[in-house]
Image (cartoon, rainbow, N blue to C red; front, side, top):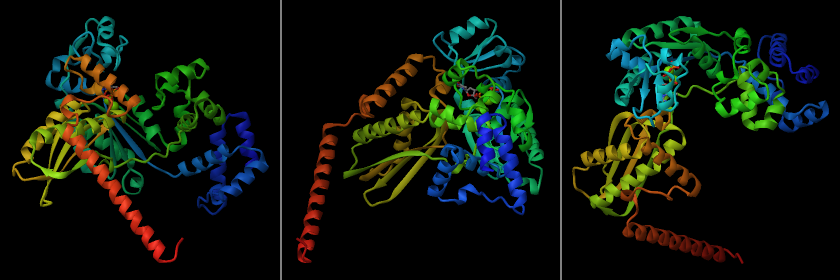
Length: 486
Ligand code: TTP
Ligand code: MG
Ligand code: MG
């Protein structure tokens, strides 16, 4: 068995297929139960074996991954077709069948979404609006309405949440559902088909789906099913399905990586997966291994339930309880700035803000608001201040305030830049670049900058902590001496 592995690696070729076949043989042989042979060995034993049999440790790791990923999973991916355009078409049917572009209206704006009719002219998302207008002069350009799109996005999520056992909201128009095990009760494909039909009926929005063994293959399948289609890629046909496709279809391959791989003559997934993984690792590090795995249809990333998706939050406890509104608002702005920067760093958008107040008697109150997806400080700070004003009705001394962003999805600021001020977006990007380089506090909104009092307070707190620590050390030292230490 080990001999076969190194042989197959040597010739590249059907490495994974033969491994899977061997795995299957091994599983059948050993009374139908999957017994991972290699993983059962200790790391040291595996390393020793690797040295003795002259094949690298990476190979063993990958073999382990293939074994792990051969556990049957059913993952459904759903993505709305030309989402923003489709929503606009719901309110204006005259847009049907025409080239439509949604985005910032000025020449300096960027394309958010475009209809398939506009795509025929080469228009695509994230393209400068000026270029898009040149490519497709007949296109109807519409300024976006993020609030409306967020509402539709939440309606679709609501439908899925009511029916799906475990789902993840991956972006504003995209969900994954883990259907593993459902086949025993109801066909996964039948269930997926019915869900898709229901979403179309309820919302009037076209949506495409892909059903397969993991998130990567399902997402690629959705892409192939578009527009308005559905594809199931069963385990046995994963590789034949992926092989002829362009490497660009692998979700983690962006423009830059694509250019590098193309310059090496790698165009199809088939070519990519037949390159020895060690070579890709040398070229691109861990990403190279990940890419190779995806090209081989291997992806064990779980579907993370929407409720378990992390939120971002921050809190501030005052040294001395306060009712100073100006100071409280100032602090809220700087807290929002801090976590909004984090949000943008993670390339996420939030659609829910929660503000928390703890009074001096420890009474704690929270208030939250669902909002249109955004990651802009100025939008988030205004709503946070508004929530705080509503929540702070008792005029009692405050001990703690907190801000939390939740219901987050993947997405960048571009999603929210319909206000025709690309300067604002550029400003945010420039500010974030400076923060990434020189630290979070390098640039701050004037209203969020610490006052002299706050700085003094912070310094006092640090001093107090240092004194506490010193006292503790002295106490410990005393005890130590008492018990005969030297
Ligand atoms: P996508 O699902 O990537 O694109 P789409 O729905 O417009 O088209 P497709 O049929 O290919 O799925 O993105 C969903 C929405 O997110 C899209 O309608 C607009 C927004 N968006 C941006 O604002 N900027 C971007 O760069 C991208 C890719 C999307
Ligand atoms: Mg879409
Ligand atoms: Mg999408």
